[in-house]
Figure 1 (cartoon, rainbow, N blue to C red):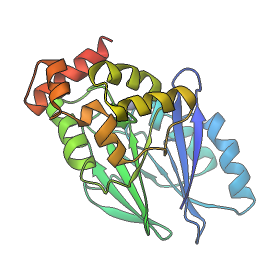
Figure 2 (cartoon, rainbow, N blue to C red):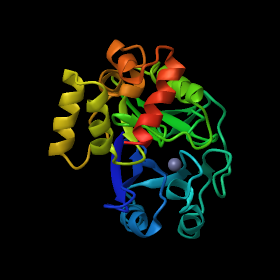
Figure 3 (cartoon, protein in one colour):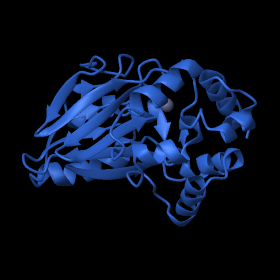
Amino acid sequence: MHIQSIPMWEGSGNNYAYLVVDDNSKDAVIIDPANPSEVLPVLKKQVDSGAINLKNIINTHHHHDHAGGNVEMLKTYPLPIIGGKDCTKVTKTPAHGETFNVGSIKVKALHTPCHTQDSICYLFEDGEDKAVFTGDTLFIGGCGRFFEGTAEEMHKALNKTLAALPDETKVYPGHEYTKGNVKFGIQVLQSEPVKKLEAFANANKQTQGKFTIGDEKLHNVFMRLDDPTVQKATGKTSPVDVMAALREMKNNS
Ligand SMILES: [Zn+2]
């Protein structure tokens, strides 16, 4: 599979839309094309030349900076929209664990309610190649705010649902937030993996697809709730309490 990142609102929201193409069939999906003026020119070129067969719009959750481009996108590409139940114009909400195909790529929907109740992460598998599109649930070195959910739900989303994916799965989040995340992470945990992430974020403007679920388990403090250093920094020991305390500390940092 081929994954093309399309940065949107660079310098403010720092969002990413992602175009994922099956190498064999050229079947393709566009994930979170929230700002059509930045996404449509990229798509148009490839659709018009026959390089891709655009099949679906996919949304990770209903927030306007993820699903807010749907109405405008449909004017050019009247395609079925796969996404969470609250996404504008959604045609299909897959059940947790439900799979569908993009050409020969197998896609699995993983419900991860918390940031929003309709948050869905999508695992794309093409042979050995694995990628997960995490919206605003998991960021490189961080996680989304708990707008519609609880610390218990985020703990389940990150440390049960996403942590269960193969370690080599590459992570593609909805925003480029790594620099800010690691600035907080390093205050909590001064480990080698966190220092490495800090160095990478300082040297690279884009970090999406550069790290895996295995890396997140090492450098993401929200996925290290059992780490004695993280527990000490929060003054808590039970995983849900540590998660809640970390989020509160990050919100106030
Ligand atoms: Zn959001």
